[in-house]
Structures are given as structure tokens and as C-alpha cells.
Amino acid sequence: MTLTSPITISKLKTTFGTSYNKIGQICAYANINMWSKYKPFRSSSLSFASISSRDSALAAANQGLAMGSTYSTPAACLAAAKSLGSGGSSWSYLRPRGLASLEWFRFLDFEGYNHSAVAPMQFGFAYDSYVSNENLTVIENAVFDLRKVDFGELSSYNHLGLVIQKSGGTAMATSWNYDTFIKSILLSGLADGNYECALFFSNTNLGSVWGSASQQGSYILIPYPYKTFNLSGVAFSIRGRDVISTSSAFKFTIYITSTRARTINQLFIRYRKTGNYSYNSSLGRYVLGLRAAGEQDIEIGDVSDIVSYSEQVSFTSIDNITDPAPQNGNFFAEYSYNNVAYTTLLSLPHIGE
Image (cartoon, one colour):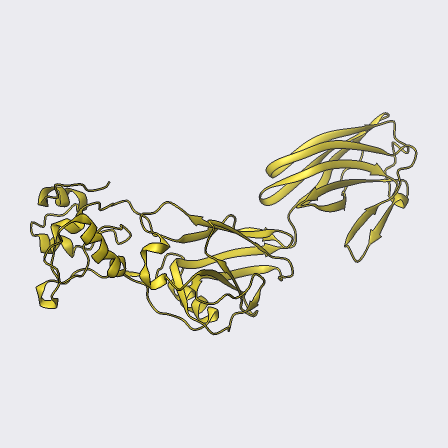
């Protein structure tokens, strides 16, 4: 709901759900949305000649908001954000205090007030779990009344930064030019675990790769800066079950589970003799060898945005059809994710029916 002229006591009482009848009481009311661009603010002017002159005075008052402390390192930002928690902000609203402080209460301040406004410059992560070969995607919520350019105090803070720390680990930070709503940050090389994070504005370019969180500079927390994410080396668990052997085929169901929706590219189920796969310890997986006579591929193709998935496939006329023991042959699943290829030896807990 946005207030338009004429601004009346009755309209303000309805907006805020109050029984107050005095403009001074309403201008200092606790239910005013601090994130609206237009709202009562501290000024010694009794009135303004126009809306534009009101807006100029509001901009000079930093939109009526205080941004909290300025921190000297990204690590200090993280400590402060952790103390605030996921629902806390260091920003505050400087309501007008009345003539005793040489600050007037004005009807005109409510012209354009948006009772549904949300905090500006809110950033979050696309997901709450990632794997080491993914990018952490930082996304700005672009639905707001206020923008960075509205705050004169942020004019020299041209970088957005992220500081992260795993429990018991060393805090690390990175930053980038504040010129995009979406930023992807490579997570390769970070240890698995739960990470606590904080997002901040910086007058210092920390660089595009993870570096020291102790670099001196000037840092201001964004509204609601505290975030978390989990990093795990495993994106999928793939296994085969319910294997049925007949005179003509093996049938089984491939199960794929993930901590969140992901896409597998070019999923294959392959029956191969063990000798045609070799286990590469440095890669931590089996590597495909040449296909021999009697060995088969079943191509399932791309599986999009899955959290769990199952599909029954069958192989016909393969060798050793009634004896899938390891010395004769095995089933493997092959797939690619984020342009990285994986090969998994499928477990076969149930044979024969």
C-alpha cells in the first residue's frame, strides 16, 4: 500500500492500525516501515516547498537510516553478523524526535510511503547446499524502494564482499564490483562442512578469489547480512537395487538421490566385465575401458531438476546372464554433472527371483 495525497490523519490511522490522533504520535509510531523510501525523517525544516525539495532533504539525511558500525576487517563483519543472526540487521530507523530536538513532524513526509517495502540490497544464496565443483550463486533481491545510490554514505563503497568461515577453520573473504544482481563464486578447494557467512559493502577490492579476512579497510554490513551454506563433496548417491535375473535379461531400478534439485547430463547404465573398468585411486572412481563382446549400454539421457529419480532398465542377451558375480561382470552408472564425468559401481543387494 502506497500513500498518496491528500495525507490525512484518518488515512494514517488506517494504514498503521492505530488510534493515535496527533501527527507527532504517528510520525514517531513504531509500526512505520523503515524500509520505505518515503517516511518521516529528522529535519529542522518546518515544511518543504515541493516534493523534490523534500526528497533532497531526505537524501541528505541518508534516507532516515543509520547503517550501524563501520568495521575494519571482513572477519569483524562476520563476528557482528553472527551476533545479529539470520533475522537481525545493524541498520536502524532514525525517527523524528520533535521540537525538543529541533525536528518537526510533517504530513508531507508520508507522501509516497510504502507500507509493504522490503529492505534494500538484500542478498541470498540460490541454494543452501553445494558441492565442491559448483559455484556459490549470490543473488540480490531487486524488489525494493531504496537502492544503493540513494545512500550518500555508501558512495565510496563500490564493492560487495562475502566472508565465510567453517567451524574451527580460517575465515576467508572475497569481493567484486557492485554492478550485478547475480554473482557466481567458485567453491573449489574449500573443505566440506557448514559455513557461516556475512555480506558487506567494502571500499577495498579484496580480489575475486578467496583471501585473507583480516585485510584492513572500511566495511559496512548489508541489511540482514548473516547467511549459511553447506558444502559436501557428494552431489548424488546412485545405486542399483531390485535386480531380477531371467533367462533373457537383468532388470533393476536405478535410484538417484540428491540434497536438492540438480540436473544429470547423459545418464548411462552399463553392463561391463570388471576387467574393462579400472579403478583410478587419484580420481576416486572407475574409469571406462573398451567395450567387449556381450557388454551393453543403456542410455537414459538427461535427467533434469531431480531430487530423487528411479527408472527400471533391462539388458538382454548378455553373457553370464544367471551369474552377475564380480568375476563375470558388473553394472555401472555413468553420468556428468557440471561438466565433470562420474562412474559408479552399482550395488546389487538382491539377485534372482
